Length: 242
Length: 242
DNA sequence: CATACAAAGTCATCTAGACATCCCCATAAA
DNA sequence: TTTATGGGGATGTCTAGATGACTTTGTATG
Image (cartoon, rainbow over all chains, first blue to last red; front, side, top):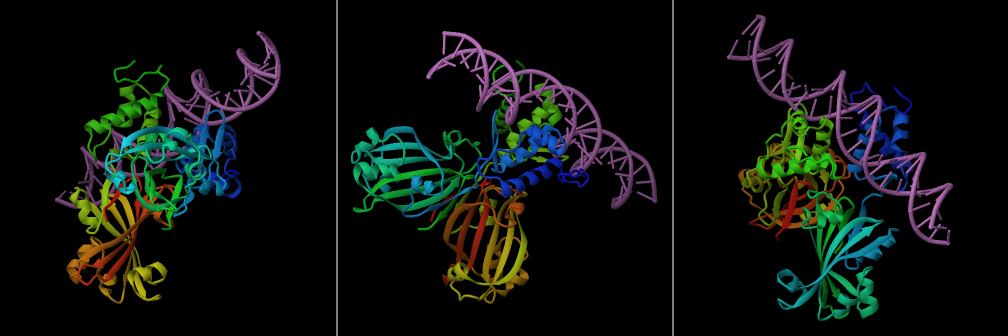
């Protein structure tokens, strides 16, 4: 029996006991962004091999509690975000009101002909050219979601040329004087498709939450943007309030 | 360079190369239920330490590709199921049509007063006693989902006394001659609550998909059962077809 | 034939040590 | 002042070996 409560005769694996102790300490006295003691220090403190500490920390990593940073240390993450999806949901605003830093980068920007669901939801003819804009959103510098936006390109050509990142809602408001309103939201869950897993930095088998939504012009009520968002399931808890 | 493609000078970690090779082999020539070679055999084959093999297999485990069985071996799992949620969705039937074995066990069976959403969705008065039946569903002997069923106990007292597991739809059909129809389905995602994580055998932080649904009598159209299902997110892909 | 027990096979955990890789910062060089 | 370089400290990877725990199987015993 050591000072720190690791007991080798209890039947419970030492690394799991350490996981529990660390998790407890993190919850009670660490904030997101804090660094754990180094593996060597923890090994000394618990009187175990560094591998045992690594095994314990592996558990915390897979539980989403901490993140390893090569050469730097092991940092405590925040809990999964409660992301309300409603009429006035705006990515950047929502997250920043929670005190999070956000970052939007453009993955791809191509013109495609509207087909099927895209054309129907945007209320335009098949084959009408739409801009497909794919953005990667990061929260606190870690991948959060990937969004595919579909916007009629003829109606809003500025998007293709002028939009370079940041809040899309703000762009519409400032450049085009259009307020967007979320009209419909559909959620499913699936395995990541295409490059999503690598952008989101998750294994191919890790689930993502897919939310399809339509943004309409608050005044004219015309559909302006159709988007498909894929969230990392471990970083978000969606709550729907239609 | 060895016979099996592990290259130690490529910069890529040996264990990751082995993960990739194993994953490839599993996809191309293993079926669900097959066992991998033993860790010692793989260590010999790739000429690495058993710890390195374990590290590689750890990756497959966390990717949901295989599962370790203490003392027995490492078994290949099936891919995530595509679970369609529609009017005629029935758990047992749906899964068995996919060639899966299913098992339903009862976790809890208590009488509670209907409140809020339960009362509203079942169209009964507040405080009306309802049977809360919690069941754990397994597919291929592994936890798949936990369901909380709410059923007006006065209207269908047989459920409390006679239902002992198996298909609830079949019970209603056979004992009460009632065909159930799924009326409404709402999906969200969240962190497991209460004992769900331990029943589903997932870490507390692993997301679950929550589906609320109402089953109505196909003839009288009266709501009969309200249920909240929590699926393991790594085992299912829900597709909604209202 | 059935049960009990022993042995072998397999995964689980832990230790010890070595070297690689990456980050950060201080100091030296341009 | 700015850029390079190098060292220390952190995590990442790999090896080697020992022991524990659980499962299966075969054998002995009743």
